[in-house]
Image (cartoon, rainbow, N blue to C red; front, side):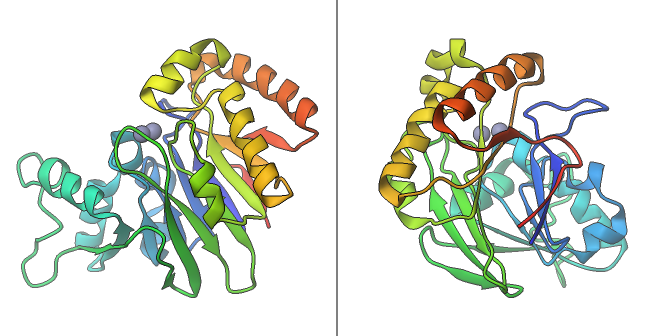
Length: 256
Ligand SMILES: [Zn+2]
Ligand SMILES: [Zn+2]
């Protein structure tokens, strides 16, 4: 399994992109930088786009991708929970600022949206996909993805503390999660439901206690302004837990 980090941050500029992962050039998870990071041919190759939640930085490129699908006479296959469909239909693709590609063109809407139920495995393009609820300010699911050759990755999406329930359902060989801010922002993390290094530490200790192991951990969704501070705190945490915990960056490629 190849995992490419198209975007690894919660903000965008010419050098950093919004969170988006690409699995084997076939599945995308989140769409913060799908069109801004991929040539059109690569966009058209995707079998599915899995969306963790409705926040702007995770759905940003869906309308632009749908416009490409229109001109190249193909479709985009999006999979997510009902709340994401509702948010897209109400706010993002409601026909006011851009075409409603959930319904248009009438004879072949460019976006094919499949609602998936949390904790019920589905098979998409040969991959087993399990959506698992996490603890964020809007309904959010992480995705465990199992490749045809048995490689397993779990990406939480945006989440705050309180992943004990979630850990019961997943057994990844690689864990991708978020750290948005450094430790001095712990109150912000608890209130807006994001992780800091110390909050991550509690979750990883709970994981290890429950599962008896700790997979390598890769972090996304860093605030670029505080990234150096996050990186230093994560280096200490990795030492303390004797674990592999690293920050992702745009263009990073991992092989499982
Ligand atoms: Zn969010
Ligand atoms: Zn986000």
